[in-house]
Length: 354
Image 1 (cartoon, rainbow, N blue to C red):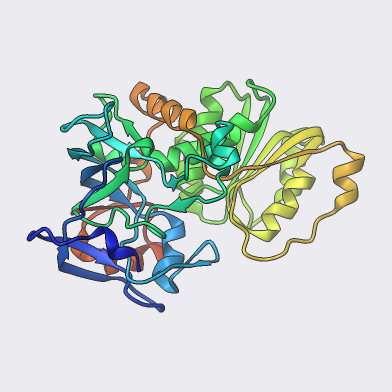
Image 2: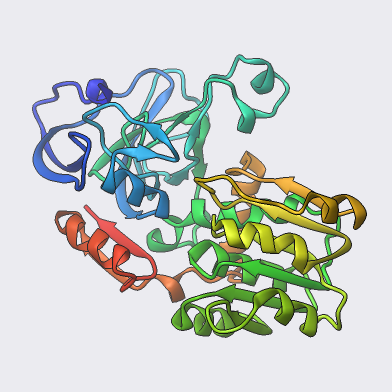
């Protein structure tokens, strides 16, 4: 049971709970304020975003295929202000404007000791295995906290995990300056990736999706070409746009088995692919194409500490804009409406405010 963090404080707070398997969350106004330990900080949540992964929690209680204990508070995209600091925390102070990484690591496994916390063998996630941000307050390990630049608004900072997730695939690529790049998916992360690609100097960014509204927004945010995969053959279209060569890099952000398979045929010989979409089923791949064409494939999951800092810098500089794809802002009490809009594809990105 994940609510062990919510020790009695005598203060009732608003929060959204996942109380059992099945569809839906429960909004309540009688949840106890979290009590922090010596290595945590308490953050008053100012804005929290809904991640596509949270839809799995909403529908079934499973997050990326992993069953969660009950009850718990979902949510991991957020920004807020520190109101309390644990006794062991010396680098943070009350009043600081902050956000946080989603992955909570153990700090002592081989990967953590090597400075590769992203691969921690005992990692846990905010909003799934640890109570999350769909609440007025959240208790967060101090090691996960990032202080916000002054010019970054709460609403933008709440989407820093989204931007960091979009940035990390570019850190996998060997070339800093890209010629032609395909972004598979024009959801919030894909739209961030489109802007990042242009910031890095890409000659041509090709955005591929199946929703016209998303493709139009991708064009507004810098995509040089857009392809509706429901209307044309995406692979042939990419080949045509690149004079038959293929893209220098392809970043797959949809989790679609078809898109994953197509990425191999969209990239040029000796080109690079980054897979970061969560695919829930097996994918049939043309292995010979990978070998014979010398294609480099990178797996990518989550982001690093440095990725987060870079993402916040991109926000602060204005080179990547978050607000264009925030379609709705709702109070926490309207959580059911928020998820209904997302599942009906009537919303791009939804922010909730406690």
